[in-house]
Length: 378
Image 1 (cartoon, rainbow, N blue to C red):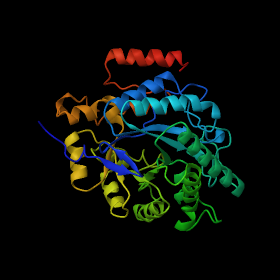
Image 2: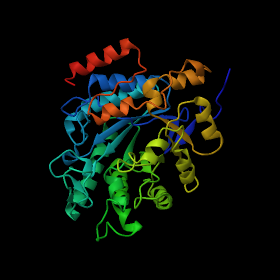
Image 3: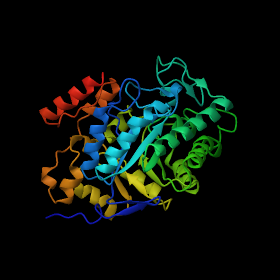
Image 4: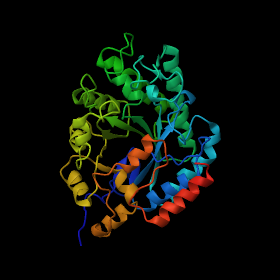
């Protein structure tokens, strides 16, 4: 029987003990209620992920402010009315055997409002509204919104909170010279571009206390001409460690770069972001999570065994088969339902603002999930 010595070794993150090195990444599935609260379909989805054996489960991107609304059925952690459902969601994950985390986010120029807020008036694409450059007052209010959202996550019973500093959302918009054209203390030099996310981290840590772990979904390279580079990211990683971040979950590419032919081709390759994780791990001593089309347990084991990362993050692989960790631990690698590298069905549904289903699911599971979503008005 094949065994995975590194994958199923325990690890400590920010004072928490993970039973293994597998993290269920915050993959957006859009199962929230239309009013921004947690639905039964969402609870069922995350309970299933946790029961599948991942050491930690991170709930998908939740919104920190009303002017940051980005998609239908996103959970709105800026609203106190979300707390009962959020508490139920955290309990479902923890009772199913995993540590529970929740990602908080502000989409900035990607917000689906008439006047998005962003560092600079750089639209999200052709035909998109031109965002309003954030004033210093806007910046302070948004920092406070992150802190209040993080505190609500803690109050709901989650073990940790994660800041979404990847994909191209607000925290990235400040660090990237492609989207940050400011000439004040929040723009220009790298130190100035890093100021906003570092102030967010400081405010969040003040809100949740020094012993509560704050993770960071981390952009290591924008893969875009004139964008945020790996060299800058390595400096940023060291600053985040100094700021007390508990771990870095490493990604590459943003919405501005992912449709470039070379980036789109790269994103279909197994482990296409692992090299970025390795480059960041060389700069910090806090745990680093590798991600990006990791589907085979033996490949995940190799990532850890060769020191490229401390944990392996699974997104689409767990959407296709939530029991991936338990099957791997039992030496039943052949029983895992794989996520095909060439498939982008789940991503296509997200881009159409539809709840996510996986083509690899049994028909009965699709029916059950559909019925729950209909009951929620989705």
